[in-house]
Image (cartoon, rainbow, N blue to C red; front, top):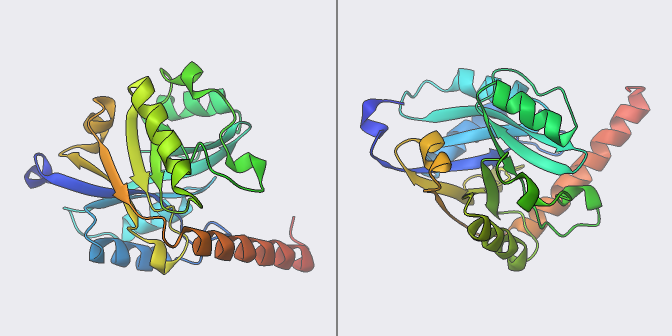
Length: 231
């Protein structure tokens, strides 16, 4: 980022997937283009257990005033966490080992959609956040793919109770998702999160549709891999 951005009011979408996640159809170049069109000043690319999409988007970005953060959404033994400013992929799936790996890389870590209602119990974070508030950097307080407003409100209340930064992200899987939720801060994201000076905005209007489409896409992708003999 340039010096012009240091004191500017910023909007970052901190949760995005590309087609490197089997449940997403977004091409890296399309994600980058749409994020800029929606008025974002930066994005985090957080594919499932992979930084390939993030590296691709970062390589495509030629705008020095637009930040692309290399991250991923890691499925741990206690639920999903969002990781930011990575140098390499996170190898562990144990929550505490993941935290250690992220910190060793100088990265940030946030709990993703902690109160998400889903038929898949692994999509809800199952470890008491109160017990790890000193190990994580933020809680995702607005995820645009929630089914009900109360899912986000619970996360917001928890973040305030714990006095920890709250962030927002679209959890984009398709074109219409991008930029539907975002984090607002002044100047530098890392500093704003560390100092708990972030806010968030968004809508869950298209959340159920996006969730259904990604579920179907993931099922089709899995069946295709099985049919082709991939393991």
